[in-house]
Length: 134
Image (cartoon, rainbow, N blue to C red):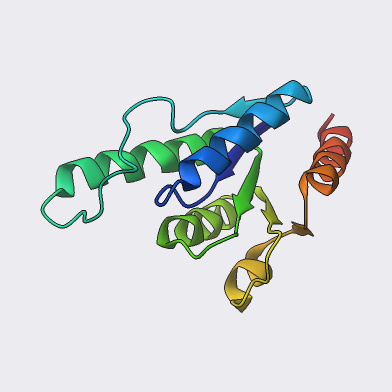
């Protein structure tokens, strides 16, 4: 079972994604690393950067196609995560929302299959999903 972690890249969000990816790998999960290549977290304005924006979006959507489960970190709002969650859902992927904070929007909740509050719950849910897909 392939898992991809989606989250806000800006404002050090990339560190949270990498931390969760590493944690899940240590727990034995097959984690797709969508951020191992080009570093763009320092770009504050993508206007005038259409080519790189297109490459990023195509890359991320291709990796969601490869995944079985999308874990969406919702500790802060993100246009990208919202679209990734919607795309994953339309592709028939399992969507797990994880947030330690309140989620003030109904959209990601409505599109999710499972909602967890921390890493411990996430591991438990992913293990259950693994058992179902085997």
